[in-house]
Image 1 (cartoon, rainbow, N blue to C red):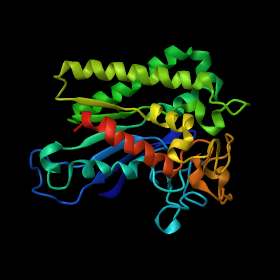
Image 2: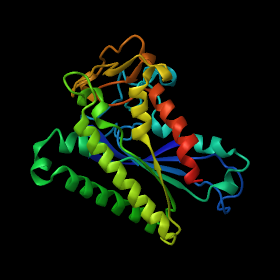
Image 3: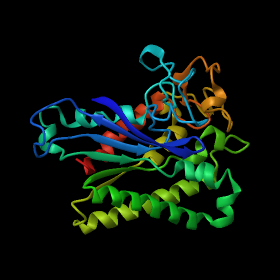
Length: 296
């Protein structure tokens, strides 16, 4: 599948909101029932493939050391050393096979990645939101916004939507405690958000009649947490430090042309916020083997 970046909207902190469209090569007649017309991903910097390169924001990654392991060693705007979630969800086609794809997948599949920046940055980093909301109320506000967006997609006839849960925010190097342990409060916020998303998904799926809507939850939280708790099982050695640094400022333009660690394959995190390509590969493999069956 080829990537075609269609639209980008300005986001807060390091999390641009984007639309990535993955369009498969022709395989059958256009408009044929059951064909996969496209894969759309709306999300933050964990999915960004460079949509915000032309935007006036500090949240950029189109310079070294980003992209050092991308084909050609090119810094494309991906917030990692190589490929990210959006690149790897091409695996939807591989899961069902080229020949049967058109009979298994109906029209487009949509993925959303939202909420992580709102918790890590807008709630915990800046005081304004904490003055307006306690944590449960803020999560309810985020859930409401997420599903308002989902229902807009559904009214546009999007039928298959995968919610990629937010990661264990407290395990990002920049969010850890002084003892380098995952921050429990931030992870509690992530868990609360994800649990409410899952309940809402179950509720809507049970209705069966919302324009043929079919929703699935992709458990990014548990899969990335598992890497942090059992790093050696997956071939990682470093969990609490980022290859390019571990503070709030070790990300985006703040590490332009910064020297990366010599053995990135040992690291779960590339910078203060974002996983490495190797970590993304583990997560995507789990998406495909355990979660995607509910969409296709």
